[in-house]
Image 1 (tube, helix red, strand yellow):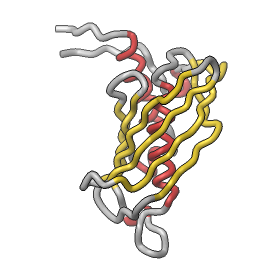
Image 2 (image 1 turned 90 degrees about the vertical axis):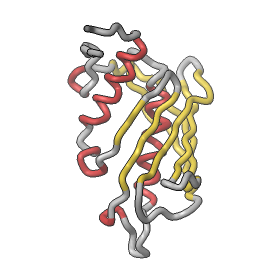
Image 3 (image 1 turned 30 degrees about the vertical axis):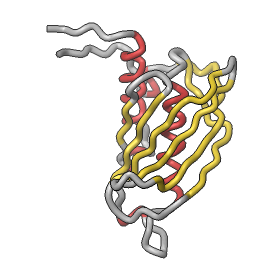
Image 4 (image 1 turned 120 degrees about the horizontal axis):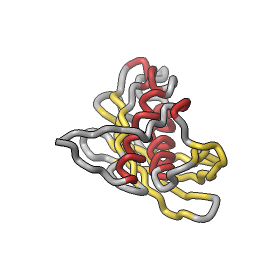
Length: 157
């Protein structure tokens, strides 16, 4: 039996598919979920090949998770076009050496051409390990199948 899903749900699933298809994600192997409009969650399993010389996860991984969560929270409120990160600020609060890094992003403000979003990073114990915020510009670049965005999803119960 087929289940009807809302246009927003279709948009969220198409964004998740687009994220999974991005070449950079073949290295980091993150997972994205968009539970509702204006929110996104990114998880990354920590691996030793993410470590800096002192044996903990490099800040680049924090940035990737935090920016991606905020970015997809922002793009979840825009159905037709791709948003771009115009700036992103990150605070690293504590090291992570194993387990899963979880970034939770949410839209703070949605203006005519600019979206402000923030993200919070957590370890497996629920401790905050970082936080970020950024501005995301709405563009004239339409979401398309060529970039991995496929709104023609068929969902079954």
